[in-house]
Length: 219
Image (cartoon, rainbow, N blue to C red; front, top):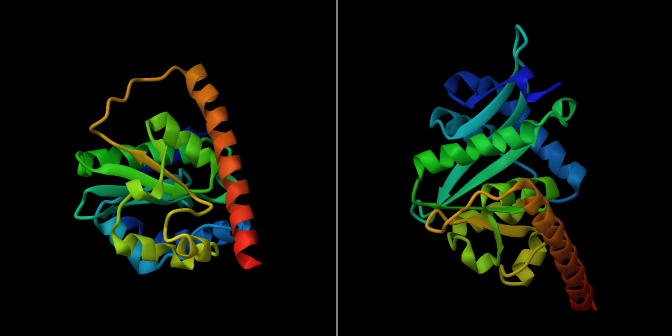
């Protein structure tokens, strides 16, 4: 299957029936990765749909099935915006859906919050690659929102103890930021790939250093 086999659109109240399946897949995906925020409340997902702050992908069957999802959240009095909960149902992966949903979420965020900085925390190499293509940069956590409600959302992650023990300075996640005030020239594809290979090496180094730090603290 390809992305042309799906309908990808801004979610609305008509899609609330998929909220349970979306939350279940978020939880299962987090378990499979062994990291990440495991649970979302279906009522919260429904709220995002009603507000027009989510992107949903559905099959083009006579009875459409949920295929992928992502929603946006604003923090720090709308100074920061995050694209959260990006998932694709297992049977529809490798069809380019994640990239398309992420791009649509990015456009929706820029439309609703044109002056906000877009940011994210992720352990997913594919998501990091998409973010870099959109113009995000790897940054320290201190450059992200200081809104306590955002950081409380990390409490359901199995790595939350690392975040708290380092006083929100480090974790296995990588912080990424898009600042609309900066110039974002269009990069050629070969340049993106070269930069991303270098970026992956930096991520590996960071994970190794954090693992050593955690091992040292436990002694």
